[in-house]
Amino acid sequence: MSDFEREERAFRAALARAADGFEPRELAIPGASEGSGPADLSDETEKAEEKAPVRRKAPWILAAAAAVLAVVGLGGVVANLQPTGSGGESTAASDASGAEDGDAPKAFGADEAAPEGTYIERGRTDLPAPADGNRWAVRYDIAFQVPEEWADATAPALPECIAKPGDQWDTVPRTPYVANITNQPVPSIACNETSDRDFPPQFGKVPFALWQPYVLIEKPGKGATLQTGSWEHEGWLLTRVQVEDAYATILTGPGDERVNQEIKGSLRTVAKDPYGCETASPLAEGDPVRPKSDPATSPLEGDAPESIAICEYEPSSASLTGSREVTGGDAAGLVEAIRSAPARSGPNTPQNCAAGQPVTAYVILRIFRDGGEPGEVFVNYENCDDHGFYDGVTVHELTVAACRPVFAEEPVTIYSAQGDVAKVCLS
Image 1 (cartoon, rainbow, N blue to C red):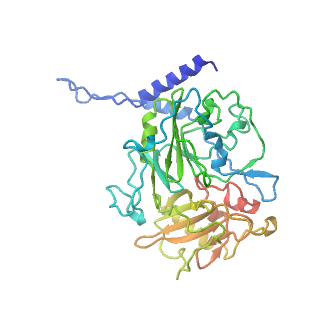
Image 2: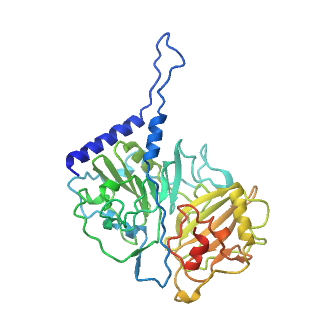
Image 3: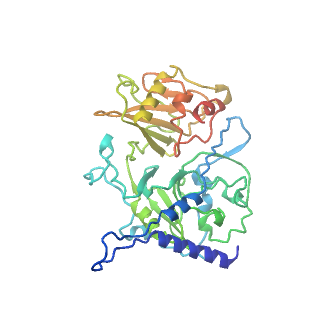
């Protein structure tokens, strides 16, 4: 693609976005009809929806005894975003830029009074209600607002291997997205032929033709840091700011600088997400995936639940990695399916794992009923043994009816599992 073609595309995209954001106002003309108003833009909306590609969802399910793999978290997968120096085409902002204005990331103190519009039901007092058209997303203990149409999706594991759109390594989401935190296995191969990536290295190695707006939250290893600042390329804006021990990277397209700033300004640390998930894990790495206390009665017993918060954790970071909520009939059906599952652990294949392997992910179901504290059911699906739903009273086997609803939607996702677990938990 020539420089002229790139400039033309960026210019057209900027014009289109500016047109989408234009809000006509009625002129106060004497004698004019009161029924006049802005033109109907539904045709453009329908055309845009027709052009939106379908987002792929293809988690890789691998047995523990599979071929040699390099298992890396999202921070490792996108380590190419860490700049080695400032690119000639980029303009880096000061590292302190995120703290110089009113949009700076901030913590929301637990002792502060809940503002108007706060989620106050079921103990959710950490977050104000999102702005119109936005939703809250939470990764680790970092909360931020994105446009509600932004999906939860997995960033490509091997962006440097993508030679062209649609090849075998092209798993780039086709819509704006909030990046999942993953422990997905990736083949231990090297793809370093990225000389055609004619953009600043801060933008990573996804080919320019496949760029999508996204937010990525990273927690680098102990002692590691990422460069903060802002960079531009053909109308695209990349911003990275530090929020306590995490880094938020925000990429937005031409004409969406305001969206970039609004996402950055909404960043904050929280103790609970909008669904009622605690952002800090109650289990340390290596702990059994079970409740810490024995309740008098099972949280699966009682009236139909109002809602269930599905909270996924990564023990190595001791933080929430993804969450969502089911309500009404879906919540009642999930409880009934777990309660109806056989009272035993399984399916298990202990012969496939070496002893003492650490758990890399687990789920806690927080079951909310009117007028009471939530009950908790711990879900263990990792490694090869002790699989099941643990409610503090009984363990129930992972079954199709009980397990698939837990992992039905991102960002709560299984990226690797024993074959028997995959059969019952993934469709």
